[in-house]
Length: 151
Image (cartoon, rainbow, N blue to C red; front, side, top):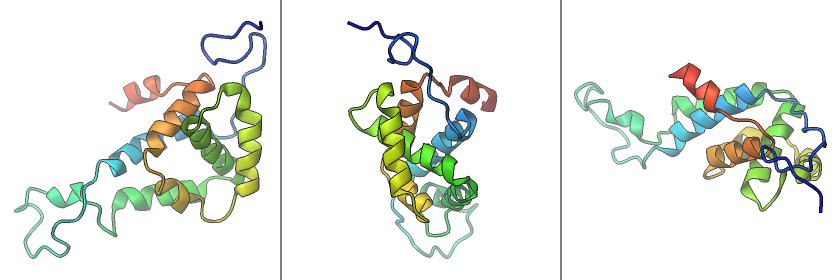
């Protein structure tokens, strides 16, 4: 039986897969997706009052002109094709019953499926932040340091 690294789950001595997207970018997307996932349904589509009078509750609702969605869409669309493929592959790696050794196959599948709708696809994926974090973790990366710097 082959010994595995406790950090990545990969066979000991095997080289850690290289990402074309920086873990910091992925961590930023995770944080933003969690902001988006926390939003609730719109209860009053066109409130007639001042946002400050309503205690800014509209920011907690999923409006069409949501700044978090706009920011995520812009960021994902600005990534190179390889970075977008990595992002999708990380989500798939963390979503399914995979291990770090499956990375090359999962990434190849993501590359084959790549198209111009990557941002819409990813943003529409429930629990994307969790899947990305799990995928990063499987490859030996963590958002802990990144999160500490942002707080």
